[in-house]
Image 1 (cartoon, protein in one colour):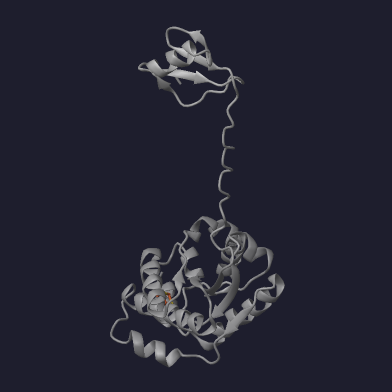
Image 2 (image 1 turned 30 degrees about the vertical axis):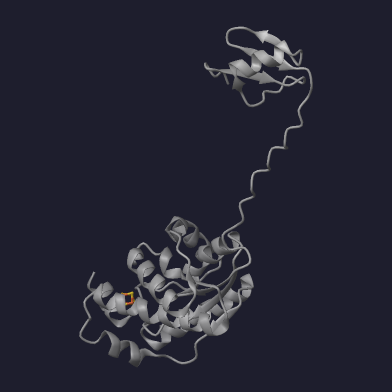
Length: 244
Ligand code: SF4
């Protein structure tokens, strides 16, 4: 690079060094330590080579999940397909977590769970299963807040709160949820609740827009013949789907 008020300095091998003042460059030439290459712009070439420090290697970017364990709340097998694939791609050590007391009725809860049992074994996904069915707890929590959106906030919080609690008890670094893949869910609200409960339990919440994998989710769900429920999960969503 040419500096109008500075002289360009080359070493004996022709490599450009830091520019110097016009006076200093002329002194080097006068002292016989450099040769004049060009007057305007002023360029001088030293009679000796200079050991330049080697260029630093560009720092290698480490995958975001490297060395981290993540507890993934799973709402159903189809939504876990792309999500697990992606988290593994990011180098997280993934364990799934089942807690969905919202799912109605019990028979559908079991069908979803059984489908996930099979899929988890197919892809070698370790799972933590919550025993029982907290349906009464869910219905009590949303009582008086049955409107769509209002009840969903409570539903997200119940499931993420339990995920964060179990993650903290079992020493996981990070939590996240398959709910983030669905275009039918309020992703912003899930993220906000996830980050809040994570802080409260001393773990991290991992957010990524998993919706970009929605088409792949559909493909994998068909390929593995996974059970897909036709409504979001709760008794209210079943009724609303029927109305539509
Ligand atoms: S619609 Fe879905 S997210 Fe909302 S309360 Fe029902 S099951 Fe939960």
